[in-house]
Length: 219
Length: 204
Image 1 (cartoon, rainbow over the protein chains, first blue to last red):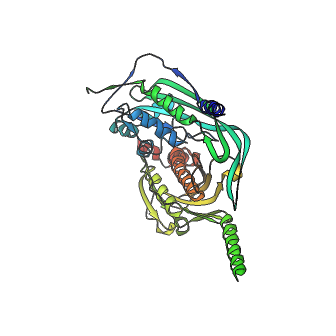
Image 2 (image 1 turned 90 degrees about the vertical axis):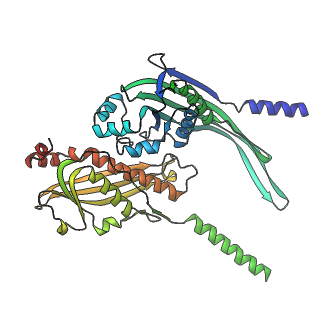
Image 3 (image 1 turned 60 degrees about the vertical axis):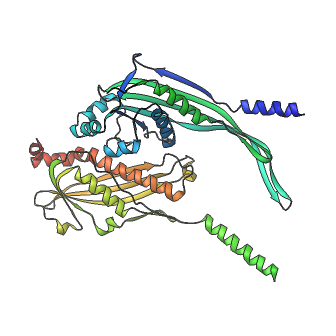
């Protein structure tokens, strides 16, 4: 009986791992140099109709970058400093528009004053689907409990595009696709077995993005 | 006697729960907006912020009110500074002192709100529809420009309805500033007025 319970637990826990795939595209294999006086801004795309790239994910990726001694300017600080040119309505969607923006001396001055070298655009969302099963909880004078089983699938798809503000070129693209199933088992107490899909996507994207950059400490 | 007490308690509890379900939402948008990064054109303008506009409270539904007055006055004041060389803010057209300038009177036509229960999307949305009445100081109508603005919350998860609507309203106000700066000098009648008044040459 104990072996059966252990086996079930192992199967369930192994089912809680997310499957994550990363695709990377870079025009060259050269690392992107950044010195200690330069910084990176990670921005979320907010022009899609049904979703916004959530700030929690952007903060998570930014924290991974900071761990590699790369100076990351907070998104809000950058967007405010250059208002209104990076609002959802006005943010450049391509390099052509970025080039036109950077021709404005006031915008260029703001960018240079803050030492911003690279822009990283993040676009994507985490969706829940495939919800199944049912769980019900009840409480009475003699006590309470939950019985049943529920499951749902989550998938995180995010794309990162890196722009170099010095020569106004695209330096690379990353796409992370993470999916997994979470479970909720009601055996008197509800036992959640959650798959950290978004966290996995953030870790993978942050780690891969760090490898794009080479921090030059000498300057 | 204990039965009576329990009944009163139950009735009060039920009333509390029911009133909680039908509560109204009162939102006050109170935030600081950043200064705009923009080089003003060689045009002067007087902006008329009426008392009604400065204290405007929107009622997009019978149970929701949004106090936009202070925030929209602050936002539009910032945005207009990025458009015009010289600017004055007045409460009425009679107070305008400029001689050769545009007189702009903003007003709110409508505010709409949608919640996740309306759209089945995980976002709160706010639309603010402004109208800018644009005249010359001599009283000639230049245009009446419809300026819609839109904002939505990135995610409604863990946000109270009040906070979510406030956040969406702030994003909509920022969008209004962006649209104003992006499109004002693209309005054909404004461009024509600048050509006629030789304002385009002044800025060169």
